[in-house]
Image (cartoon, rainbow, N blue to C red; front, side):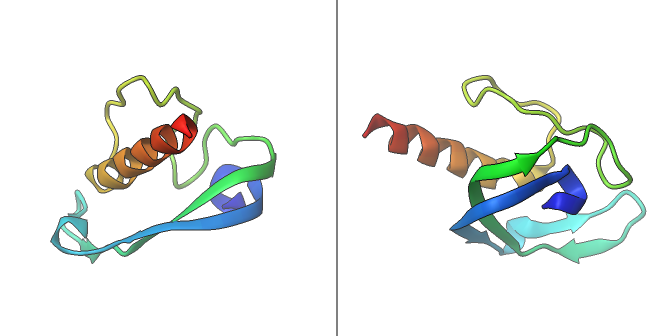
Length: 92
């Protein structure tokens, strides 16, 4: 987490694992990758969010009630599942 975001996780909780046909990705250069996404929840962290590095164009916080545009198709399902989980959890 630190290498890609500049944040240090203090506590991680398991959320979900994503795999299957919708996790096959073809990069612009034609390389194909089968992604297995292990998603963790981190609500306790330290550090400052890196704005740009070699692997990302932009990192920023966002309001979960505002629609997101221009995100990777591989990210949409996990992100929507997480947003649904958070909204349901916060109702309690």
